[in-house]
Image (tube, rainbow, N blue to C red):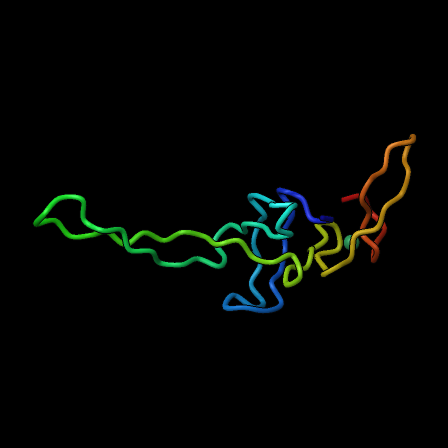
Length: 101
Ligand SMILES: [Zn+2]
C-alpha cells in the first residue's frame, strides 16, 4: 500500500465522504487503514453486572484504501504517490508538486 501511518487522507466515499484525517494504522493485508476521527461507529457493550447499564463506546473502523486519497503536506492537494531514487533509497514523492512525502 502506498499510504503510510501518519499520512493525511481524504475520504471520497462512505459516511465520512470529503472529510480528512490522519492515518493512525494501516492493514496492508486487508488494504485498509484506520483514520483518526473518521469512520467512527457506536458500539454498545453489555452490562457486566446486573442492575448496571451497558456503555456506548465509539470505535473507529478501518476504511478501504480505495476510498482514501492522500493529501500532499506540501501542496495540500489530493495527489497520487510517485517514487524516485534519492541516494539509492526509494522515496515517495507527490506527483503534483514533486516534493518528497
Ligand atoms: Zn504536492
